[in-house]
Length: 424
Image (cartoon, rainbow, N blue to C red; front, side):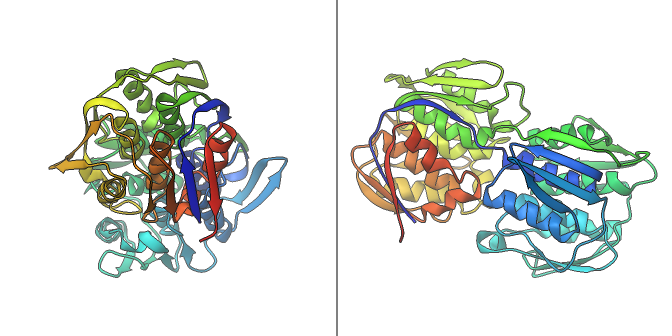
């Protein structure tokens, strides 16, 4: 699909997309739950669909009911066949641990960029828990055979907090005694805080000390009926908020001000850049400022903010600095390089030195055609920058946005964006 975007002024209100980070975690916990979990405001992104497909393979039933989803599970009957994780890194790493609870051979598969992303930490950790592993040198496909035997251990978490989430879920579900996981070099701590908060809601007891040590207590019974609502997604909403800051006025509803999502930090960056931001309990209103100023931000704990911040920096006076470029290597693309290349094609130079990205502004993207590189956040970043550009920008592979925010283009159109979509 090709998206064609022309300079526009946005105005209006919209709903934030459901958080796929929350949705996938809730699907996993609903699978482990012996009961019925009713999910309000469920996500419909490609990654969400992958999670729903996986829990269905495990034997859970998923029914639609007036805009909600009802997941019924017997706790953990085991998967039927190999698991297709699509292009979802979270689903792969989280459900790998849950699949390891089963006493049968299972192959984890994926598509596209996920097949190129290293998963060697699975090879390293699982054998310590009694799980047999066979991978293609740390890449998909990965064969595993449990059952996982809960045990205290120490491991390096520098490559994936998502795998730690899976281990916490799996061990908490089956352990009969306190287990301690000690992790070194943990990345993306806010995402683990998010996992722990949802585990608590589902009745699990896990405590942490400085996110270095996690003590998992056995629970008397995982059986309960649950009713939950999926939070609005700060990662996807960040693009809408940046679009408002550079052209127009937009109110985004459904964003909890006490959310544990790491990308809530976009609010602080917008304020630092001089945008006018009004935030209430679940609504954010951002007004355009024609004299935004350069900012500096460390995106170590929230690397998904890199793309919208690049679009923001283009409209800021001075040199903006975004740190932690190394967190972008193993995304849907090598995201730092992809951003650099697509914006270079549109007349904008992005400088990368060591672990920092530098963007000089203000500068407007020129008219031109670029590829999304198969990366949903690259496609959205270019789209937002084009709203304040010099001419029409075409993005091929624009369907990549379906991975996290399938209503992205329709939402922008409802706010007044001049854009159209075409089949390639």
